[in-house]
Length: 225
Image 1 (cartoon, rainbow, N blue to C red):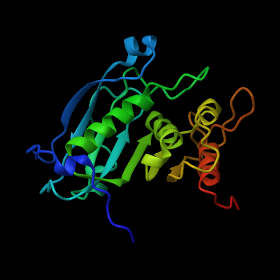
Image 2: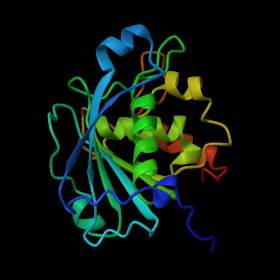
Image 3: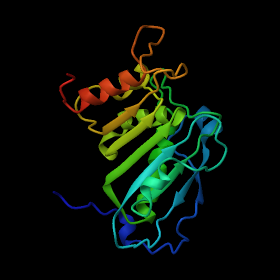
Image 4: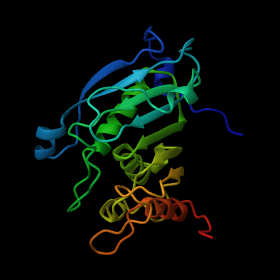
């Protein structure tokens, strides 16, 4: 089994930050359209280091996106699972929900936001670039599916609950073909009427959990059966 792929943060100065505490990071997102810059340019995310963080050890990084309405960092289902085995990053939307639609060939502002946050985390902390994970609920699940589509080579796997993936995003990043091999585990409630597993857009395209699942299966070259 191949070893870890240390990032630049493994040779950067030790940040000497308090573990198990959410630390806010403010960023100005680049590579946005002028309209996006006005609406989404100023963002923030939060980092939580494990107890005993070793600046010479490449850690996995787990990103989490909450559902609509989150206004600050909050407890996540991942915290009990991560314990002290990974660096935890909490993503926060600019408006009520993450902007996960891609229209007229314009990339969602969440893609450069996440890319910049990932670059900063990997540049400041000692992480393993082969073990980047993204998880989310509802709006955060839509975000996770979109990021796996747009940035599959940089994301090892996603875990989502109640999300989907638009046809426009799939077409924009051409992620229904081989080349974006993120793995995934996707959950959906049988009685979920807001984000049903079997969901069609106005043109009859599958954009629910089943559509996001099928996209992952195809991009990984797996047998849909």
